[in-house]
Image: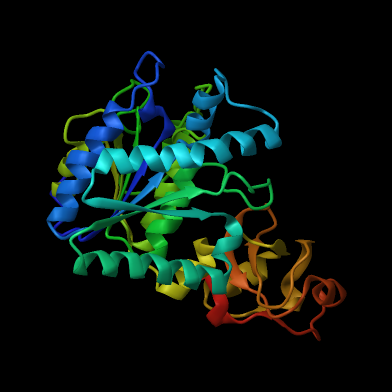
Length: 359
């Protein structure tokens, strides 16, 4: 594939927990040291904005506690994260060296509600701008706030978080690094370029079987899907490959698997589509689906059911009769009100056309 003709000024690099271990699953942070001290530092010195999304807090906590396998109970995961977050940041400060300052940002789904989303966006923007005027380089390092995360507010893996952060700061490129060479086909060969995420592409994904990690290729493809629809190129590559980040920035199709972006959504549409966790689900009939696809508003007559509790202004999923999510929108009715008027041709507008994004 021809090199994408773009200067990638703002880059998100996601570093997976597996890169803190050797191929024999022995603790070894030399790979992340090289990624930080030599590769990311080089990009920053060139004047590029780089934001790191790093897994590893629980892995560092497990190491400090002498655990060989990832804890299963939520309280034990939170305890490991509480110990590991500090260890992780100390490690990055050592990796980057004395001329750099790590800025820790811990996020959950709750931080992607509209007002907090804008606050997080402003914080990151201020950090990126601030470092341009000081000798001391600032590196934003983002992780999920595992010390307080519950099933309701956690992302579950940092692949999803990295895609949301790329959206949050309008990044030019997302690089997801782990211990795999990219998306592999049935013959275990790397697929260099993906233009569309089809059913076949999804079949190639496999969950991780590592005892220290979560996620796997499935979550990476979901992250790439968000980027593609947001107009952001996404590269999945092996962090152990020499100069992997520098090569990816020079030519994203050169390393791993490049997921080619589509025409990007506007910032507000990106937030509706991917920026926050839906509070509920609205089921619609085929007529309503066709209307929404033609940029019409969702009316109560086309609603056949709903799930969850939501209020006016919340983001919800819109699914068809096969329970397939094809849109998301900002509702104009609460779930309590909608339950009373669903199916009625004399009801009210449920979601205005300006507040709907077709997925």
